[in-house]
Amino acid sequence: MSRLALVFMLVAATVSAATPKNLASEGRIAEGDIAAPNQFPYHAALQTPDGFTFCGAAIVNQRWVITAGSCAQGKTTSDVVVVVGTSRLDLFGVPRYLVDRIVVHPRYDVNVDANDVAVLRVRRPFIFSESVQPITLGSDNVEAGINAVATGFGRTSISDSTPASYLRYVNVQVITNEECREVFNDYHQERLHDNTVCTRGADGSGICLGDAGGPLVANNILVGIISWGIPCGMGMPDVYARMSAHRAWVLVHTMI
Image (cartoon, rainbow, N blue to C red; front, side, top):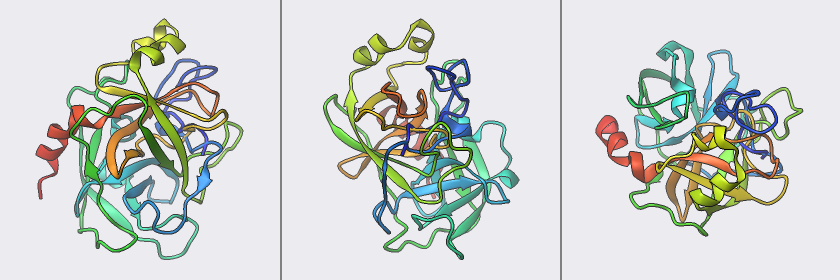
């Protein structure tokens, strides 16, 4: 997968075009590996009703998924379909769920990507199986040096014009926010907060356009939600909303 794309393409060095923004509008994992069936049963894709994949998400329980605020901001329930239980979007009959509620974090700030989380409720419960499972929400701050994995259906390179049909994953390592700030210029530093997490992957790997909203998982625990980065696989850190900082808010809004 290439670096999960930002909702807004950051031209040259950030997640937005010319100005860093979220990976939401495009993105897939650059230079990532293709996931095996059932390898990441918690991963969900967000699509338009006509089948265009624009973001990722993670299953919280039988009725809710969590994604990036940038993926849900301005959307109505009729704009989004949740796809689960597959590592291939080109297969016939993949489970698709309509949405009946969207809740964006009340303190989500699109200008600096603060509190970049949202939750979506599906109209009918997910049917849990080997290919559809919830992920445990992280309650502790993830420490630098921890190995994690990010997943997404985003583009595999900045030159791609469409999202991927295959789910891809990239192995990354959590780094400190201080190390992250040293890499980015002043503009991007404003988008790094105590409630964000940064990671680095191998050269050429990372998040890409369309990967926003997808999960960052360490030891089978959700530790982050893909927020923004500089697509795709350009050697820059990728940035996520820190799960432990938003866990209480998510639980309040997703109790069945």
